[in-house]
Image (tube, rainbow, N blue to C red):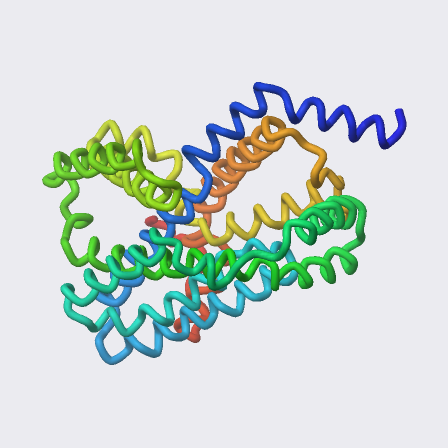
Amino acid sequence: MSPEMIDLLWTIIGDSPFNRSIEDGLARAVSMKALALFSLLFGIGLAMQFDRIAPERRIPLLLRRLLVLLAIGILHLTLLWNGDILTEYALAGLLVLPFLFAPSWLVIASSLTLLGLYFTSWLIPVLPLLSSSWMMQHVVDANRIYANGNFSQILVFRLSEISAIAPLHLWIFPRTLGLFLAGIVIWRSGLLRDMPHHRVMLLLTALAALAVTIDAGASLATVSLALAYGALILSAASTIWGARLLGWAAPVGRMAFTNYLMQSVIFGVVFYGYGLGLFGRLSVSLALGIGVVVYVLQVIASWCWLRLFQFGPIEWLWRSLMYNKLQPMRLRPHS
């Protein structure tokens, strides 16, 4: 079969009602929700570390932690995938750092203000996307270069895309900052330190967030649905049966940084020209299937790795650079 016929078949398969329904379901229930939920978790993590680090060491350690994250993010953005979120999170973390010293009322007010700016989409007219004709030509170029180019050709094209992608990051930057601050508030509330006693409140929060999502616009629905997911998971995890049911995800979560970067490596091999070259050639169902398989393999690999080591390799590197000292890697015998 000619390459043109193969491309036509991929187009027909990808545009089937089955694939359209999957794409619609992912857009409504998944797309961007994980990023919003992870923003909350990142803010919670910052607040947790702030409380656990000795006061005189807080600023240098957290500052170094965020600068190391920024460096890794820039490398990831340029060498592997320009959809990187680490760079944005590092920059947002640096801006949020002073709020860890602020009173809760100021953190809450700032969070609500930033989320309000995001919900009103005030940055879109200020930072419009490039013209539709440019975008259409760019999609054609991306399908050609990513699917057929070698590493250096893809690198040059990836770098050229950054200016087009930058407005998208700037649009959601107020949301990222607002959710970081909301995470700080959640940690300070004590909710996560005694979840069994707050199970009813967590369920009510999830129900309220789901109710808001039903009639919400895309911007609000992204945040409300992410909040609903988080509250439901926490509520389930606060029970014995829920903790057992969700326990399989603990190892992959403990190695989230490593697994995030490994997905970029794996999918680079799957989609780019220096690998299988499947960029732009898979239906959404096949792409989803590959994603599920990779995730399952990462769950297994994470479980095996943490049977021997305390941290994932990237987590260990991050922690060692943060403390400016090599951290113990292997599990102690009694562990």
